[in-house]
Length: 407
Image (cartoon, rainbow, N blue to C red; front, side):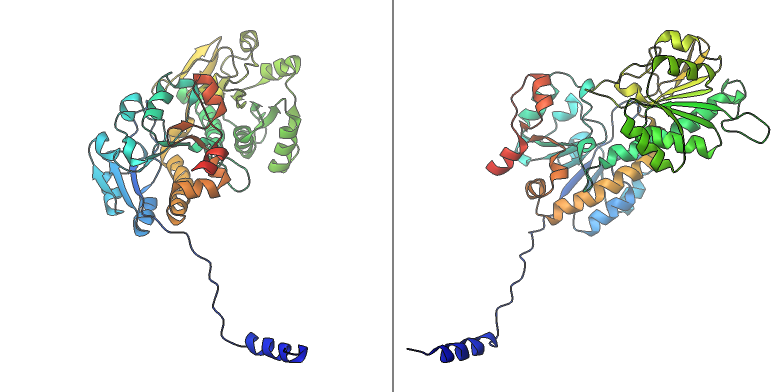
């Protein structure tokens, strides 16, 4: 039997012998087949991937199909995409053969028919639940696809990156729109948004202190306007003060205080976020009647109902109407007004996400690994994973975390 000294000497010799190197086993990469259909929704001019991003994906070994004229609304030509390495196809049916489909608006019932149940397809698009027909979810379920609402995807900080980007665009654009309609070029009373020495600054009221309200506030202050912000969430008002970096005139939404502010306003921005899918209407018609003639209302919240009783949905072709002498701009999807900028913003989120899916060996591994992406999954291989959707459409649903454990 070996003594303790012999055992120690034996262990010491073993320690200096060559050892096997322990390397981390990398995830198996997969090449993705990506399709970008031409948007069919009215007023939708954005595209989810710009040519520069397509070039990055192609250079990383992925195949990209782009339907002809898909980028026209954002002023990207088929040639731009072709030179970036994409294959140009002319029919919707051809582009829907791809395994990963990137769309801005949800697919129509006609487009869903082109999906292939045997291809295990992945669909990225907005959800836009309020406008979906009852059989929308059933049609998707029958195709056994994995559907991901990009507006519900979270990043590492718990922020919705696409919603944030589109809200920044909408907030800044709302002030630029208001400036147009205050001027007499657009039929306004000839006011300049902001102020100059010796002239009273424009009075701007912003209802909502979220991202839209924040960037509308930044734009208005930058132009020299006098700004007042209303919101019922004290935390949002405090956060807005901190983000803007200066003292602001803020208030909770009290009818008497709001009415007084609206009477003096030259511009009013509706930027309240929707609760339970519908924006609360906080400005009744009698308040609008008391506003000055020529005042401009930009209701950014119109896509979820609007926060003015007098609001009615308009289009980019006919964006305004006048009621009680007040100009109303109520176009949903303001980001499509600046489609090129919005497309780059979308592409900045989609490109690294698609690369990660490929690098992690496919969507199943990525969904298991990335809780932010998993938050956007509302259908997994034909099974609804979102409780609200299941209850809204009276369809069976299962928790995504349980499904991940099963598959």
